[in-house]
Length: 247
Length: 247
Image (cartoon, rainbow over all chains, first blue to last red; front, side):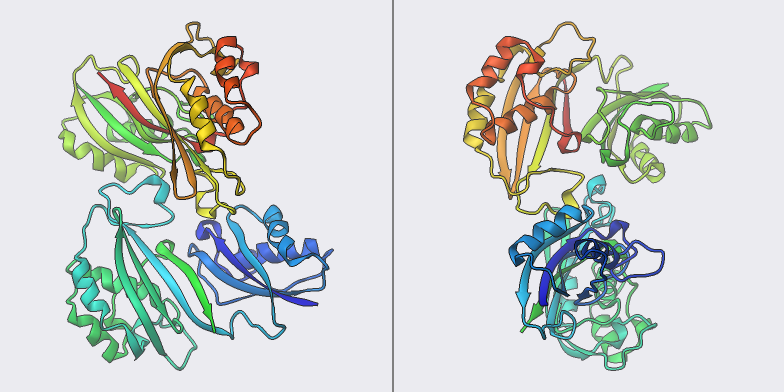
C-alpha cells in the first residue's frame, strides 16, 4: 500500500461541488469512479484539502489516496487522465509519506477571484468570470480596504451564517488586486478560510470598488464580527482554488 | 425601415452551427427568436457573412437585418444582449446603407486556430483549443510550409469534397503562427475561404509541425488540386471566425 498525493484542476461549471452528494455529479465522485475501475471495483476513497462549492473552479486542488497497485507513480497521472471526464485534469501525482493528510496538513491556501470588466463579457468567459458590464471599479479604494483584511483577525463577518466552525480566527497573508487585460483578479492567501469567506470578501471589496460602501466600512465589519455588516457573497463561478500549501 | 449591421461573438460549443436547421439549436435561430420577440412576433431574418459549423466559435461574425422599429441604434446592442443566451453576445450595432449585404459585400475574412501544447490541457480550455498532449511542434517548419499557401491559388486540395462551389481560386493574404504561452495560434486572412479550408490547412500544417509530412508536400498538395493529397481536417472547436472585412 502506498499513499499518493495528486494536484488536480477542474472546471466547476458542471459539478454540484467537490464533495460526494447523493444523486449529484461531483468531482470526488468522478475521481473515485475512475479509481474504482483501476482497482477492479474496490472502493478507493480520496481526501481533498477541502471542499469547493458548486461552480467553483480549481487550478491546484490537492487530494490524497492509498493504493495497493503496483503501477509506477509516474504512470498514474496519465492513467487517471485517460479515464477522467475532460473537466477534471490530474496535473501531478507523487508518492508521499503514509501519514501525509491532504486536509489536516494544510498550512495555507491561495484563491483567485475574477471579474470581467469589459463592456460586453466574452461569451467564452461566462462560466469563468463575473460579468461587470463595463463597470470600472476603483481598485485603489479596494486595495486600501483590503489592508484591513490582511493579518490575524476573527473573520466572523466574512463567514456564511450556516457554519459549525467555532474558532473564526484566521490569518490572511496577502490580498492583491491586479488587472489582466480587462479582467480584475483578486488573489488572497492565508492560513485557512471560513465557509464562503473568499466570496464574501470579494463581494464586499466589489461594493467598495463600485462606490456602494466606504473603505473604512471593511475594518468596521471585521470589528463587528457580524455577517450582516459585510457585503454580499460574490457568485461562485468567479472563484478558483489556486494553490494549497503544506509545510 | 432601416438596415442594421451587428458584430457578434459566440461560443460554438453548444450550437449545431450558425445556420438554422430543423430541430437544432443554432446561432441564427437564437438571434431570430429574440428579434421576433422585439418585433411583436414578426419574423426578422438575419443574414451573416457566412456559416460556421457546429462547435466553431466566432469573435467577430457580422450579420445584417432590417427593422421597422423606432429604437435608437445605440440601444439595440443592450436590448439584444439582455434577451440573448449568454453564449451569444452582440458587440456592436450600427446603421448601414439599405444595400449593405453581410455576405455579398465581404472583401475578406480572418480566422484563428488554436492548439494547446501544454503537457496537460487546461480543463477550462477543453472546448476552445485542440489538445496536443505536450507535443511541441516545429513551428519553423510550419511557417515555411505556410509560405506555399500565401498568395492566389486554386485551393481545391484544401476544400471539403462535398462542396458545390466551382471556382476554387482564392487569395490568402497572410498566415501567421505565434505562441501565446503554451498555446500555438494560427491566424489566416484572405479574400474568402472554401468549405473547411481553414481546418484542412490547420490539419495539414500540424502534420508538418509534428514531422508526419514534409514542408514541400504542402506546395505539392496545392499543385495537385486533390483533397486526398492534403492533411486531415482539424477539429472544429479550435477554430474562430475572428474578423470579416468589407470595403
